[in-house]
Amino acid sequence: ELLMVSGLVLDDRVKWFSFHSGYDYAYLLTLLTTVALPSTEKEFLELLRIYFPTIYDIKYMTSLLDGHQFMGGLQRLADDLGCQRMGAEHQAGSDSLLTMSTYFALTKAKFVDRNTGKVEDARFANELFGYGTNHTVRKGTAAAVAQREISFSSNGSN
Image (tube, rainbow, N blue to C red; front, top):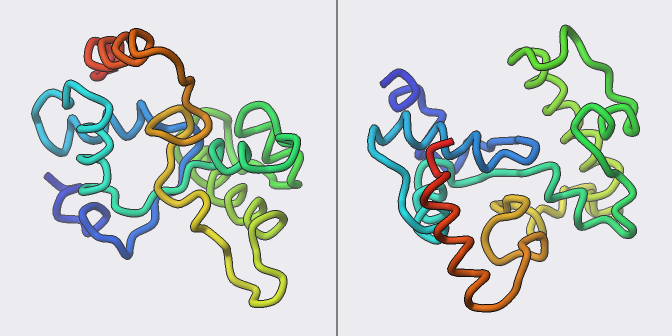
């Protein structure tokens, strides 16, 4: 209830920054809606856009770089970008600060238009690594897509 009235969800002026966070958003959606997750990935992504209209997934952003030069987890990417962790790893406050500083360092290094100085986010806004129809999703036969939907609905509340 507090999250619903906080102004942090359902507002396109609020930006959510994360690292490979599909399951994190699924968990938050179950808390916010108090119902089971949608049975298909398409419905999940539609619901996600309602509650979290503007998201940035740092892992997805790194997939857009030539040669995917930043490989590994958040800490390795942060180290590569010269971002310092404050506090213990896997603690909410420390991980949140590191995610924020890593996002800003990555956008400054790789996604700022040199002429305007503005972040070019059209390529990565509202994309999740491994979800939807972007290039990080494993594509295949109709049977593989159907299996993915079954896996999504059976694992959706994890």
